[in-house]
Image (tube, rainbow over all chains, first blue to last red):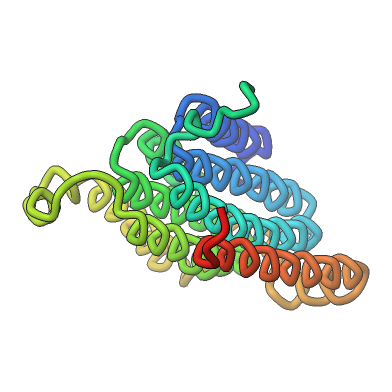
Amino acid sequence: MTASVPMEHGLILCAILFSLGLIGLLVRRNIIFMLMSIEVMLNAAGLAFVIAGARWGQPDGQVMFIFVLAMAAAEVAVGLTLVLQFYHRFKTLNTDAADTMRG
Amino acid sequence: MNIVFYISGLVAIVATVLVITLRNPVHSLLYLILSLLAVALIFFTIGAPFAAALEIIVYAGAIMVLFVFVIMMLNPGSEEEDRYKQLFNPKTWLGPSVLATILLLELAYVFLQNRGIPSGVQEVGPKQVGIALFGPYVLGVELASILLLAGLVGAYHLGRRSTGGRA
């Protein structure tokens, strides 16, 4: 890692990808796009773990990446079921339809 | 090896920007898969081939299929005719194809240069990852299995109620 790419550049890439995911989450109102943005953010976090693990040549980063992957799979399964439920109830994918609590 | 990292990073950023700006969910999903493939190539170049394989198999293979299923079930918006016209319109598939070709050329470059082994990088292979995963992190594996079980039960429960007639 030290011989090829500096770790800072990898972490900058992670920060850019995470920020893009956050911007997407805040800007989009379509619930499917919001879930995709969450995926982008989780992926950026996993990338940061793997880059840090590769910097010191330890497998711990990849182990944490596997945990992030399992978490993302569980989150997507529940999240997409909620999307289906949302669509059945409101007949739209716009999250502003569910503003009963005036949030 | 440096140049592969930077080009992959650029492809990942471009694809992610398109993910959050495009209007059609299916196009957005295509670019999200491209972004994941670019990140997998980055994993490969920094010496984490196991993470790269998992990224492609689990993320781009399994999780994205769930998204495709849900988008197809909901089928939001446009009519059937438009969709067939879009399928053969070069504008819809040219962008993803160009980015995917860039990634493929990079992969070919890596393999042709020194038979797939990144140079100047300490590689952390699947064996080391497995030893760490089932050694000091075995409690985390158990917790992840409980989390997946909870996700399964939760998804089943929520999915059943939508057809159960309540609400």
